[in-house]
Image (cartoon, rainbow, N blue to C red; front, side, top):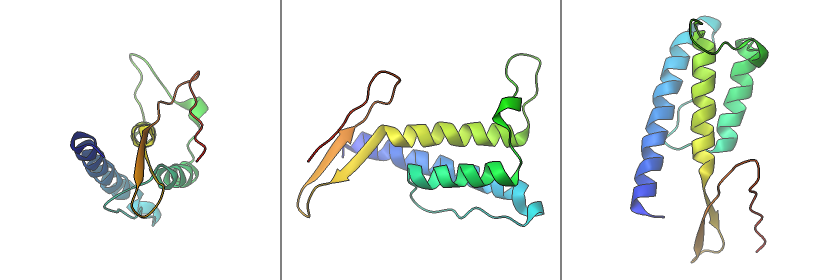
Length: 118
């Protein structure tokens, strides 16, 4: 993996950890704690998002946007974690064998899907 990509990933991991600490501060009254790690996967963040959505009774249909509207703390944290999950999904590392590692940059958009067959 390129050095700049690796640095970017570790900065993102630090941002996710900081967000989890803020979320834990809000969730301590509900006796819930999110475990922080050194590294994260998009699947782990999906799991955290679904549990956070359930614990905080988040309804995405009631999210507010635009000028003059105040986001709730739960909405702000939920959207930020979604953004971090999407960023983390952009660079995917695939292990092919013990000696070889193939790095694939996946661009996720509505029209582009990359299928890999090894």
